[in-house]
Length: 349
Ligand code: SF4
Image 1: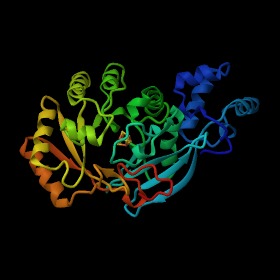
Image 2: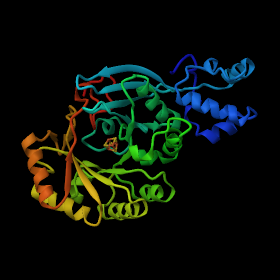
Image 3: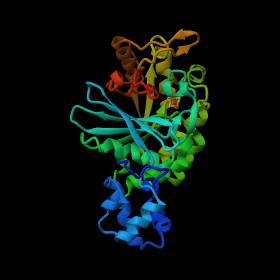
Image 4: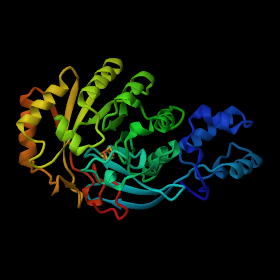
């Protein structure tokens, strides 16, 4: 997968009952079997032995199974694998398989080619925006990663290229495929959606689902600094209200992600601002020492990653404010596959 079927958008992004309608007059039970075949990564209609020869030929004439190709694979010595994937119109995206020490695989999926949010510390943001991904282009990232046969992925973080909530419609369709027990069957509890924070869409997700654990890229809880690092960021008070609403409705955990930069957002004032923002929310703060990307400037100076001592000191400040803190293990830096590094065609950060 994908295969000789590559010639345009494929069937891989159609939720089961949409596929039934699309493939009519094919009997619904056969359409549902095709849905299951795609989830198993079938190479072509020809391998679908439950279909008649005429049906297979007719389907091959009308449809493609998949719409993306894996262009390159980059392996990091730490076990992370990054794939560069070409879309049917030639756009390029990246997707990552992260593996922890227990061998558990987590797929980090992209939802846009490029990103319009323009966060100054992010390689994808520096690329600008090409387009939203179609549902199948999101699903196929998972299929490509599973095809590596490295175990799993059993978990998903929607944290790759792009702001997922700007592409909520197609993401919902992709998740309907990914979470379907008759297909890929990944439980919503194993999927985390990471957002830079769009309050209207967070409320929409709370109201219409699917209910997923959220990770908010907070980075700074100080309005001015956050606005400078993340120029498209919303006012923190709006965001907080939306998160309170989300948590009240879903009762799901919320992670506050903090990309850390040397000397910028690791002090006592920042820790107090985090505490104020977190008040009333059930949160864990996840510290992510920034993964360097060459050439990114902030206020005319190169951004720098914090030392381990600086990160540790900030963790203690946060804990002193009564917050629960975790630290992200560094993964995938050698292939430009770590957080904030996606979007380099050469694979180098
Ligand atoms: S950090 Fe996320 S939202 Fe910000 S530019 Fe990068 S991909 Fe977009």
